[in-house]
Image 1 (tube, rainbow, N blue to C red):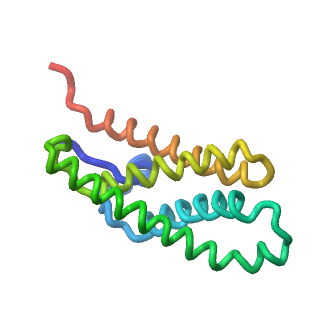
Image 2 (image 1 turned 45 degrees about the vertical axis):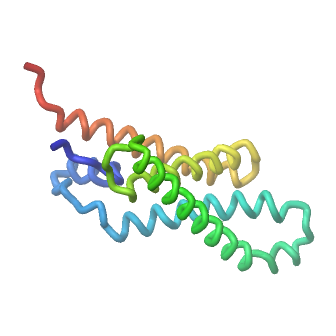
Image 3 (image 1 turned 180 degrees about the vertical axis):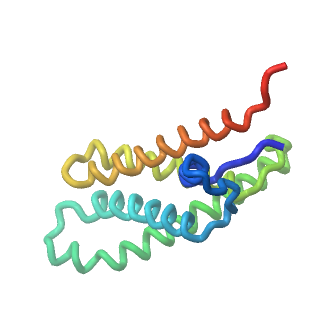
Length: 155
């Protein structure tokens, strides 16, 4: 069985520095950092979309309710995705894989779409969007490198 990498970039760094790259996919620090970045991108996207054009005092007053709204939005999206996964499995359209991996794909795609919008929005939000896109690109490159490092030699 070939290894699977959830957050490949830290594993590549560990491997290149001589440390063990066989870390758990349930590493709490990696999950906390990724979750914080996902929520930050979605929060900034929502703030730009919903609070633009309001008075500064209104924007400040709506920051906390907006954070709760973004959290609730993600909860609904993840639940709807779980229902979709269940329906696709029942119809035989999905092979067996962990639901968390399928959920992660959805979250990554949605967050990347938000980040692309932040890049085109300009100002400081461009930096947030570029940071997300850069992190995704580096993680995908690290996953490809690790997969090639573990590839079986041709016969």
